[in-house]
Structures are given as C-alpha cells and as structure tokens.
Image 1 (tube, one colour):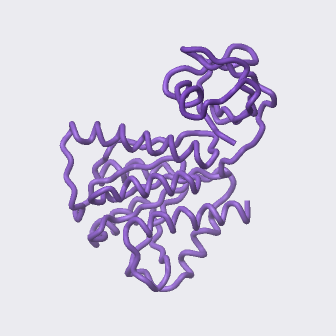
Image 2 (tube, rainbow, N blue to C red):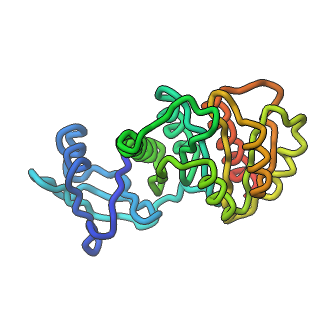
Image 3 (cartoon, rainbow, N blue to C red):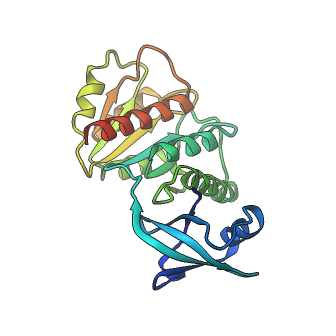
Length: 246
C-alpha cells in the first residue's frame, strides 16, 4: 500500500486535497483510479484513505479510518553522523530512516575528508531531505525524519547534552557489557543520540569530549565496521531493543 505525507492545511474535514509532486505521482506515475486505497500520514498519524476524485491539479482523498497504523518507535533516535565522503551519507539516511531514526545530524569532524562550503551544504541538505522523505514513504513511516544542517562538532555536543542518552560506538572499547548496560537505560519516551565517526574514525579528544558531554563508549563487536555499517548497525540495535522490550 502506498504512503503519502500531507499537512493539516491540506485537510478539509474528512478529506485531503493533494497537489504538487504527490498529485503528479498519483495521477501520472501510479495512474490511480477513484476507489483505490492508500495511506496519508499527517502530524505523526497515519490514516487509511481512498481516492475520491482526480483532475489536472489535485487529488481529492477521503479518510476511511483515522489513525490506521503507528509505525513509530516508542523512543526517539538521533544519529550524529561524522560527515563521510562520496554518497555514503545518502545510504546512511535511507537505511536509518527505514529503521526508525527520528533525525540525522551530519557533523564535521577532525578526520572528515569532505569539506563543504555554505552553498554546497544547502543543496546537499535538500537532496538528503528528499532521500529521507522517499525512505519514509517506502517504509510506511508516520513522519518524515529531519536531516539537520551540517554542524560543527562543538554544536553537535551541545545538542547531544539535551538527550537522555548518548551512545558512542568506539573501536577501542572492549567487550559488550558497556553496550548491554547502556541499552538497559532505554525507556519509553527516551531520546537517544548515536555518535558515529567518519571514515578515519574519531580522534581521541573527540571521544573524550563526547564522554564529557555525557556519552557512553560502547562496542559493536569484535570487527571494525565502516562508518556506514556502524551507523546502520547502531540504529538497528536500538530499534530492535525498543521493539522487543518496550
């Protein structure tokens, strides 16, 4: 079943008026007909809807069942991702949105190879946000997670201080006990930050600063993971813990 996102301004009573790119997708790509059903997510709620009519400018959609399903986690996961090179961040955004991340914060770290000027940061963010929306539609999310502006490490640490828990997967951390202990602190409604280094890993002083900000150094196992693998594994680990225990 297809999933589209709308806002409260496009709702009129029991109907949505869908325009723009989503209307074009319904009309010209999917070639939907009146009576076909799909999901519309609005403000964190996902409604079962039926296409009532369609014309050249808008699709008129009727709500059949409010709050049809909730696919969101009982926790909020924020991924602080060391800025990687090439298109790795696109993969990270796609997969972590599918896994349930609430937001992604790209972070410039000392060993980040990529350096973006302000113009590139703006255009990249638009591209990244579009990928997040596409992944949210595919995975039937109730929300579209936000991809934040590229931040400095100092700014990231300030943001992380406002979370309930900050996990720092670090290759020099031995054993899984710290990981298990950290996960046991996750409760319903918890806000969880995950800090992932870029391709070159963290500098020791960055790990120290994260721990000073309340972070907990954890292990993801005995193998050295690439930055994109570490991000997906960490978010997946928290997702599974929440789904199985909360």
